Length: 256
Image (cartoon, rainbow, N blue to C red; front, top):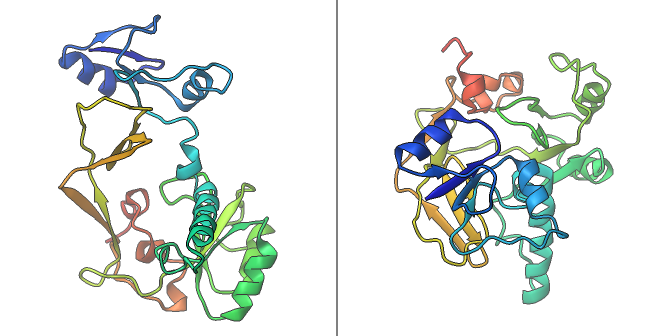
């Protein structure tokens, strides 16, 4: 096996070489390319005409952010729902009921405000579209909180990110274990099958080796991330992220 990489990542190169893989840095005779997103976009831009052969894999699909960015994922789910409804001639809301009502801010603020007023006591969760580890997330139950936040006047969020946000109806009756919120993560597995591969998205939990046809590998084992404080949907706990967010980057700082 021959591999190529455009940046030094010790855990990657060391494990490749332990398997006896040879590094080829300057030619195109490789089986696996561990590259950053910018490199992948340059390689597979529409003008290059480059496509992976059956024996080549890479760690990103071109335009993978259409699914991994929160706002673009919402856009594509809504588009998919319209296509399903057009094909079937029926409402697809039940088919996609795992996606809560979601809007992009500030673009959809008027639509969001209209929906909010229909259910004025509902809790909503705000998330920046392109950040991770729970950064910038907060819960609201009043429209005035968004206005205060955008003006830098919401306590705890005095320097709001000016990027786009998504706002989703909060699931305030989640499944609990020991009275605490959790999320279940599935681990990654690798496959030696390389036929008809268009690329490979190597995530922490699932391996997608092809979109056409869609081929996904899920390992049987997994793990759960837990909040350290028992769940409460009381409005006085809306600002307590140790109650609401399972992100390790947040929970590791909790007193519990």
